Length: 306
Ligand SMILES: Cc1cc2nc3c(=O)[nH]c(=O)nc-3n(C[C@H](O)[C@H](O)[C@H](O)COP(=O)(O)OP(=O)(O)OC[C@H]3O[C@@H](n4cnc5c(N)ncnc54)[C@H](O)[C@@H]3O)c2cc1C
Image (cartoon, rainbow, N blue to C red):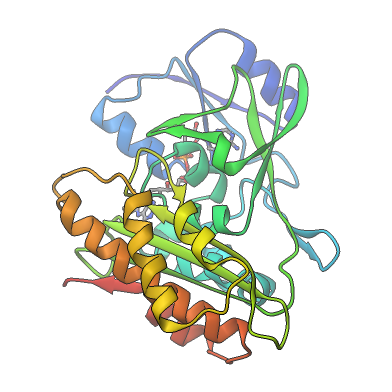
């Protein structure tokens, strides 16, 4: 096994300084991705920098005016069970509930899931559908980057040298909004997605017209991406069954899946169509006031072959 120097930062400036002291220092948070890649010999860092002791990076805060702020060390388990996240950003809690087993959910962080930049990362479709932005800090100061632009490809992000993710911001979720994430995978637990779809729908009010819709597709392209043509069909319209079906078909054209051990590209396109339709129909019901308990949402969010 490759040896490395182990470093700990107590403040953000200290982390930036340590990251800047030569190439080959890798940040770790929960280390659930790190340990797998290190043991496989894929990652051979000269030094590993833990950010777990930096105070405040595990905070969740919400206000109706400014929305949700998540520190990068917020665990996937906290996303799953936090009452305000379940209430205002349910697709994020649903996605967290589909993630690995509870032991991994306790260790794994939302920042690690983002910075690992897997196209199958389960938190990513919901975060993108809710319009998340990444607040980054580095030697040149802070900058805000929309998550859609932060993810550049498998394992590649917009992070610059010695930069780190210090916060995620999600805008307020307007009234009359509903959302569902569905993960399709071979097994119902401890498996990564073959396809993951998150849909967030907002109505204008009682008139039944869709004011905003955001659909994000996971594991069907080098990065998680928006189903832009499907969204365009729905925005400003009454969401009748036929139109939802058309949008679900359009989403298959927005995707660009590959064949791999988890499924063929053709199979993945068929799943995109099915999951887009299902996530939209449930999101619409929730946006129109249906009270679906979280345990039911969690059951809806997992679709497995075994
Ligand atoms: C058994 C098992 C099951 C899993 N199941 C799932 C699953 O169902 N769904 C899923 O999406 N993932 C799954 N994963 C993958 C993994 O758990 C997640 O990607 C997790 O969210 C990573 O978080 P972490 O804190 O452990 O990241 P780490 O391993 O600590 O780091 C991951 C990457 O992010 C970087 N990083 C971390 N934090 C920051 C930061 N603040 N700023 C800059 N860079 C940073 C690190 O340098 C590293 O490159 C699984 C992993 C295992 C081992």
